[in-house]
Image (tube, rainbow, N blue to C red; front, side, top):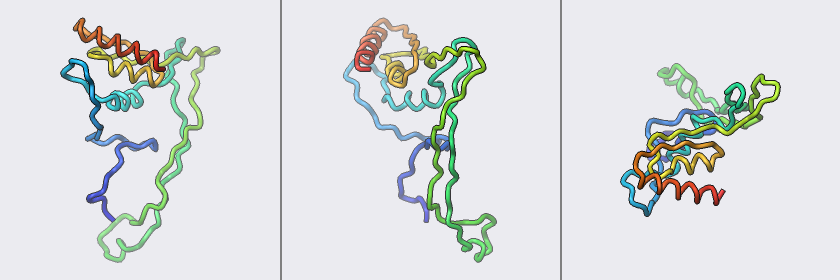
Length: 163
């Protein structure tokens, strides 16, 4: 079987790297900003690069501990019969699965875990900040335009109220 004409999932909690091209739906914004982007874009980046918690004493990030089960494949010898394949082939009957079983701890006597910190040096209207807050991270945004900074403050204030 091939994947021609079939949708492929982008990314996986089982550890597969994101692909080169991400398919992300657009998201409308009624305000006056020329370069908005959907919340899913920073959500993927924050989840991938910013740890949920960091020890305030030693700055060590907590890392997810995973129990990963391998993919199960029903093997066939078709490729060997043809004499053209060097690897065994087959049909996947169960995908690789991963479950969170805990988080690492630092070696501090009394760890003080704080939320991870997201820095956006071009905050614009604050979309990255809103997503950071939704994901339980702290946020620092820098915006040179007073107009956009005001829009970002309003958007972040609404996000805090909704949380």
